[in-house]
Length: 247
Image (tube, rainbow, N blue to C red; front, side, top):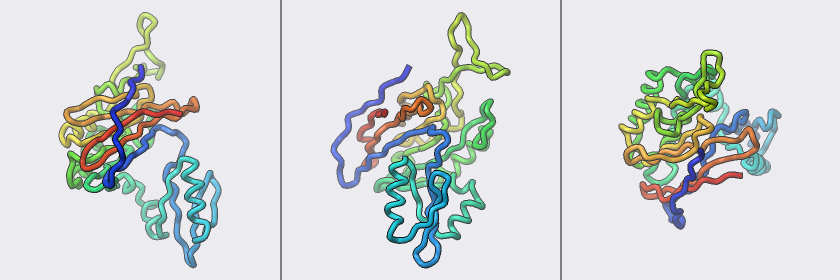
C-alpha cells in the first residue's frame, strides 16, 4: 500500500529552497562531469557519446542534460581525474542547500541477496555515516539523503526471499519483512536531522516520523514508465512542506 505524502506547502522566501527528490532510476547516470580543457574547451559524455563543447555551447549542453533528468558539474581535468581515481570520495560530499542547512548524501546500502557494488556490512555503514555526521555544522537542521531506508520503519518492507531468491508466500499471501539498515536507523535516532530521504525499497513509499525526523521513501515505478518523487520545501532550519508527485 502506498502512503500519500502531503504537508502544506508555503510561499517561497529568500532563504527557502524547494527540492525535487526521486530515486531508483536504474540505468541512469545522474551526474555528468563537464571537464575543462585548454582554450575554453570542455568535454562531456551524453547518452554514451563523447561531446566537444566550448564556452558558447556549454550552457546549451547543460540545459539538454537537465531536460534529460541529469545533473552536470563543471570541473578541471585534475579534479575529474582525482574522483576517477578515488570513487569512494564521491560518497563524502556534504552540500549546503539553503543558508545553515546541509545535505548529507551517500549511496551505501546494507547487504542484499543481489550483491551489488554499493553494499557494505552494517559496521562499515555505521563508521561511514559517523564520519559524515561529525562534519555537520547543525545536524538538527540537516537533510539526510541515504539510499537505503532505516530498519523496521515501514519504509523498508519488502517481499521475503528464500535461499533460491524466490518470494516466499503463505496461504496465498506474499510474506514480507523489514530489510533496511540498522546503522541508518541508529544515525537518524542519534542525530535527529530535520529530514531523511530514501529509496531502494521500491514498494515501500511513504513517510514516517522517527523522533523529530521526518523520513520519506519516495518508492519507485520507474521500470513501468512512472517517475515518482517528492517536492520538499525547506528554509530557516525548518521543513516547510512536502508533497508526493508522479508523472
